[in-house]
Image (cartoon, rainbow, N blue to C red; front, side, top):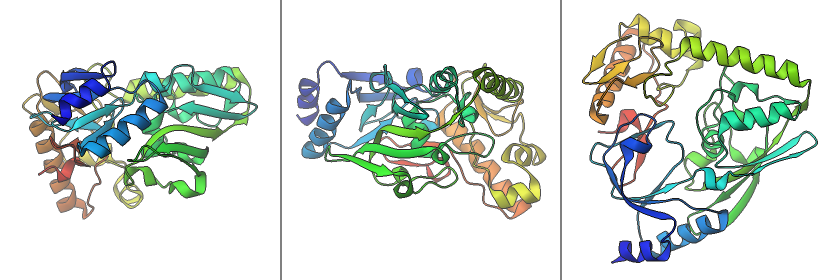
Length: 316
């Protein structure tokens, strides 16, 4: 069988019957039939070429920061991009940085600060890998990492490597071309600014302090569930404030709960199921549309058993 051959082809980088709940930041999900963890860019290229040739459905996951796995698990092959594509993969050349996709974002922020470079302090508290951050144009304080990107290296479904400069990456608020072109980010370059290390450190500590006060840290969650809409922000405020005004703060279905600390987070208080989270998201979206006229965009992505990745409000 093709799946058995896949395990034979990559014996040291493959695992079977993996609990998605154990690797998910939401601690939700059934079993994944096969998870591949490439140990190098070259192995990732080989895996992508092999999966295409064998016609095996697959989905890319990183630190799972914005992913909700199905209760039924995952039949498609999961490609997990992690530390193996990030170890010792931060290079500093003057005010320019290159980083591998598996680099942990808070660690990258610290490394940049230690080099006396500023410009990306806003990412210091974001739990996730650098590749996922680039793909989502992630950031905080209404900023995105795309502002500092110089180029991005990626691997397509055939296993071929590509390099795009910033203008070709389609960066917009929480958007990039990598969300729809089936390419996997493997590294990227950043242009930063020389600064005073202690001053940069103070800015980061302020950001981290604010995040700790506002956001839930002791219960599993995927981060922000809804994207901030500029029009809604101007009329009604950020998503968390809107959700709180709608009366959803603290509301729960099963063990999934709209966080009492910040309403734009849904937390797992015990044994939450994906269906519980999806029900809360649907309820919030419906109420927001009725009361404000705005259709709240969901940042969290739902991973169907067949590997299809869709916005969590499109899971049905």
